[in-house]
Length: 449
Image (cartoon, rainbow, N blue to C red; front, top):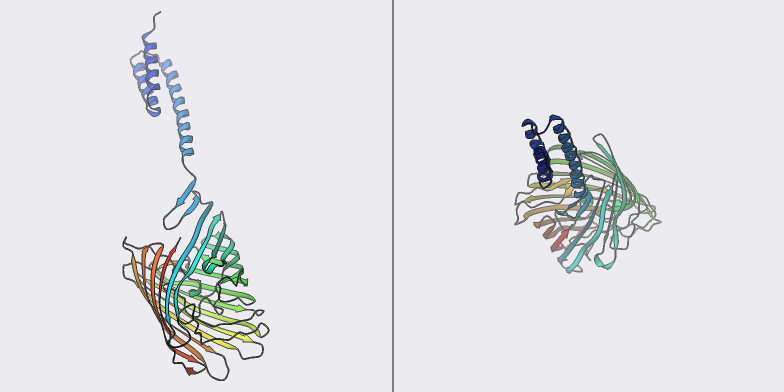
């Protein structure tokens, strides 16, 4: 049986194409068919037939390749730089474990007053998680330092946009929108302890309730308000209780911003506290475990506490490696029978990164920094603060003045070593100067994620 030359050529072309790569075989087939047509080996009609078949085959294979490529791509995005965050590539949901560990060593000298504080402690040991599902967010974090669990944040949030404006609401326990030093996270503070007035009964940190917020998309301005009532747990390490219902409102704006490392922010807040619980403000001086606490409102029984009002004004500036922060607070405690107690306080701090980094500004507050070098980052800081309490009774005011010096070393983005020196320069109790001027030397090793 005789086979035509054209049939042999076509069969050979088909066999050769079959063993070639997918993309190359179709291109080679079309080129070969053109040659056979031009040489008259196959008719134009046969060429069209075979060419169309090859093209259809190519389109089918391309579709299969596209499906295979799409199936091979994961829809999950995992971030490991400075944190572990799992999210889908389209931003519809995310999940992130969070936590922090802070180990402190303290040597406090009460200068003859009872009594000195010396030793080490696990100051904070927090574990939790946070994330989002479409426009909804969630966060839960508890502190296990000291052996008892204390809920810090536990809320569900919702956020939306109106052009360049963002709006949000939180339901659960979250920060009270009041005060700059109170709101700045312990992970990012320049000093181991906040000023004497911050994170206390006159500037409370957290409450359970609802917080609504409104802000520019770049946080050039922001406004938030909250109506909250008590903590989830006031016996798990907290040193104060939120008394009755608390309403607070805070606003901030940037009068000047050159870039993220050169800016000035100004803020103000108002707070009113209802009665219903007992009230006490007794600030620590040089350590959060101070035994010597000479300035105090005393314990005001629930029946005598008639609420309180307070306001703060603050400023935060970043200029390259230099930063400065200042806050003033005025608080008035009202009593049913006795005179009102007025407390005013302020703190001014300044810091400088010797290795060229800048304090990170994020959403109106401070955040973590990333060292420029593999050898880490160095920061020095200084703070002066003063607190005055007027009981409006015979005997005069009580007052405390203190300065703090700090050196911070950041080996990596998520770790830090801190060394602080605190010194009380003046103590006045009911108008009489005290001979006791406590001081302390404190060290911290911390890690967070």
